[in-house]
Length: 128
Image (cartoon, rainbow, N blue to C red; front, side, top):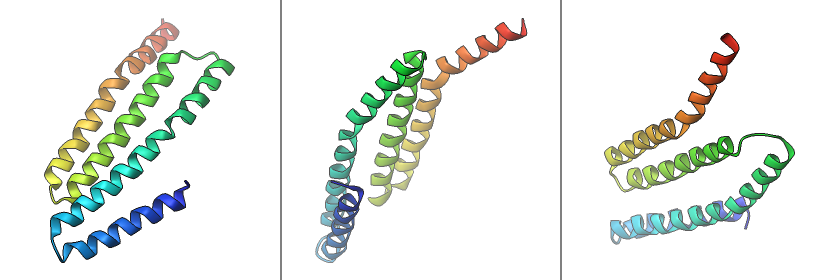
C-alpha cells in the first residue's frame, strides 16, 4: 500500500467517525483509534526497509553502530509519542497528550546523552 491508500483509509475512518458521532460519540473515537493503529502498524512494518538501509550505510562508511542505533531509537520514541499524544488529544484528553509529548522529549534527550558525551570527549581531545 502507498501513502495514498493510507491517506484514503484515514479519511474514510474520519468520515465514518463523524457519522457515528451522531449515534454514539464513543464509537467515532473507537473508529479513529482503530484506523490510527492500522496506519501505525503498517508504518512500523516499513521499519525493516529502514534497518536494511542502515546496515548498508554502516558497511559503506566506518561509523560506530551505536550512533545509528541511537538515532533510530530517537525516531521511534518521537513516532510513538506523537501517535499516542494525537490519540489522547482526539479523545478529548489533551492534558494527557501533552504529558506524553513532554515525556517523549525527555526520553529522546536521555537516549541522546551518550552521543552528546562522546562529542564532548572528542572536543576535549582536540582542545587538549
